[in-house]
Length: 279
Image 1 (spheres, rainbow, N blue to C red):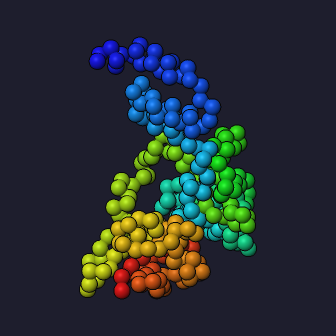
Image 2: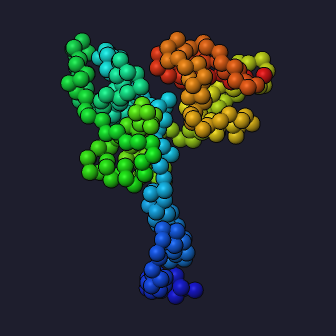
Image 3: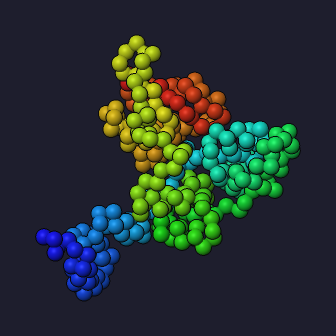
């Protein structure tokens, strides 16, 4: 038994496996999976992630538009600084004022540091914006990772077949497909547990407070609902799709199937918090 687990035996066994040259991706993937006895589980998982990248479309790993933290090209400096500080993000897509579906630039937080000393300065956001990298939803994750590396860019704007913005993808998003979730100091622990909580202020048990970023699949699973996530991925996106408005959101009530949704927290661009009542 000790001999079987020794490094030298493992290398001999691995070389023996590799004598059979795989001819297809599936054969190579099977070879990796069959090598679990020689390799650490994390190593196998990472190799599987690398091999899966060509089969993973960028729309599967992107942050959908409804979850993006963004700016408008006509935003005032104070509003921009508030978004920067509150979100703790380092890069922000800037949407066109005339064509609200289109991202016209990327703004880096570090470029705004000189304005923190004097918030009364005049800001020309166009002079600070960087040229965005655009990628189609249908692009392969490995192709986009190569593009990000070659252009020394960390983020790309994902566009649909009509040229409108459907989301954002970062280098971290793609790397997580290989190495698993990468948590930093801004990530929340056990986020899913915070997505849906009982509404203790309600007079009956069929009422919940729901984060707008709650994945529809998670909502369906927890509350035994049956909403489609074919076109949008989050509950907030589902409601925005239904009302087709991006202003005066707070307080609106949307009736869907046997559910009543009340928007209890929102800004001019997005929904944050929802009360969901099963009728």
